[in-house]
Length: 165
Picture 1 (cartoon, rainbow, N blue to C red):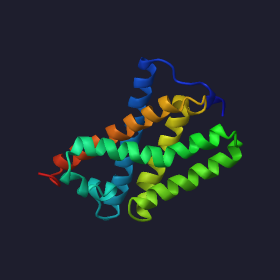
Picture 2 (picture 1 turned 90 degrees about the vertical axis):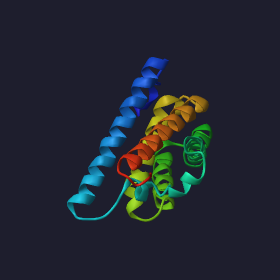
Picture 3 (picture 1 turned 90 degrees about the horizontal axis):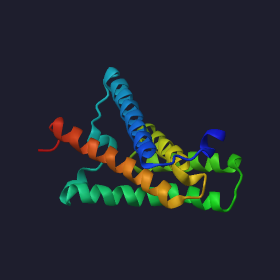
Picture 4 (picture 1 turned 135 degrees about the vertical axis):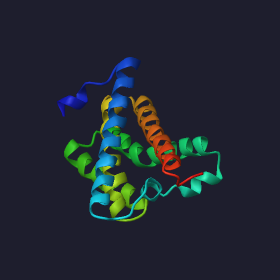
């Protein structure tokens, strides 16, 4: 837990951390998609995220709203537990359960591999960017920004793959 205790300070370090986080997420998703393709399973970025309904709205603004809503719903409970000074050995299983639920809410069991694990990575980012130091506003802004960037990348990849015209 010592790694978490060192907060990311300064815009330059925060931008580097967000860039690293987004890069890790992209490679993780690309690796999962590669496995799906290698086994002949059919899956696309839109099926992974199930956001085709988003295109009835001004997409970037709607995706920002979804990122804010999901981060408040699935990462803010961690802040509540931290504020209650619950021991880490209780918080970690709660984080895992919430993220499994987060993945399952996106569609099915297979979505746990995408959104559930991605949610765990967002929890790590939340804790590292101020959550451990009880700077929840900064931590929440960091994960919302990272989540939003990932959604925009998903949108652009879907357009590139021809799923959206």
